Image (cartoon, rainbow, N blue to C red; front, side, top):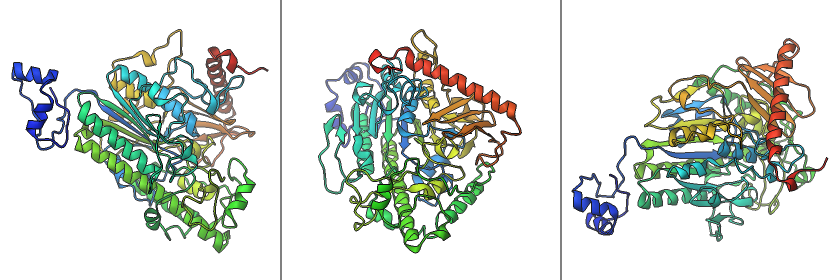
Length: 561
């Protein structure tokens, strides 16, 4: 039997604290032999015990923004997880933050659970999930897990009411200012403003506190930690010391940096690809002309060739990317603190860690929160820069388009999976297509004895997600017909090597992703039967998922025709 860690403590103090406990009585009466590292009272590993789970989610992170996915940004902690685990090259999200978070935590497409737009019912970011669409945290709690949440939430309902024991919720402040606590709550109590506050650090510090408490009080139980950074979502806010590391590193421009990232991806062993040209006529998904005026003459809302920008524009854009890099760098540093705590409590070896992003990098340009002061240092609390389409195209290398689109740039995410006791492979790629709907099924399959999550009942459909566990051992098919995508009338379906995709208002395009992940060669005219087949399947699923959303919707949420 194992003891939890109580640190710091002497052996005498340790047993003194336990003298009235049940464990101490067993020790006294049965003379059990217990292995305890008395220097710091660390927990010893337990063979055969359910793994701890840490699910780390970045926000608006591009596919190539990590060093192990091609970036020049320093991400040694995440690179280390990739070296000791797996990198997935064909993993998908839903193209937007709140739909992805619903899909992650329920195992359903967001339309099924009314967390992306469905005609005829209150849905999308204001939608309420059906009662049967529980978060998997609730199922883990039934399996004796302790659950912790740190960071962005953006799911309907509150964390503490849905299986979490502690929650540090950034609230709406996450899209306003990284330096203010504003709407931040700790277990639903307001967090006071403090000097030097920066949300990425605040999120990680809370995670470390939760893990320390777990080691002290609940070491006999496994834990799930849902760790959700807002970095590098706009506004581009970073600490001065982090920005300084990258100043001057992006003066070569987005065209050159994209080429360098693409070359590094090939050197790292990513699948052969063709780099699509930047789409100079594709700008932000939503026009905010007033924001362009506020941001000044250095802002550019199209990914024009770098050589066509004015010196003022080049300087402004290079500094924006330096801030973006600083945000990713800082996130990695803070993840390092969490990993160090896992190691300190002797939990690292049996912790299954996932890292991914909620959507691709963003082409959005807007000004929110406290506005933008052009006289303040870019990246400080008084400014509101956004990444924009030029650097977003670079961040999403080697793919087309951005967040909100369902072309590969909008829906492709890096996925790193690390679990020393459960994954023998080290530093390998996995090319099997996966989706964020698979994460809950994967976690439940290794963490619980409950198979109800995948069982069809009269109350709810089977989850479309599949467990990734078979792919831990080798690259293997996950036994599904297709992956389906819809966001803001951008549509796509992937079936095997084929992907059918259409931006809002456009005709279907067909791509062979085994040869063309960059979606540069439209094969629709050459394979009209395949277009017809996949379009029919996309329509069938759209009807099915809409019917699911409407089936048990409250009458007050149904919209009149």
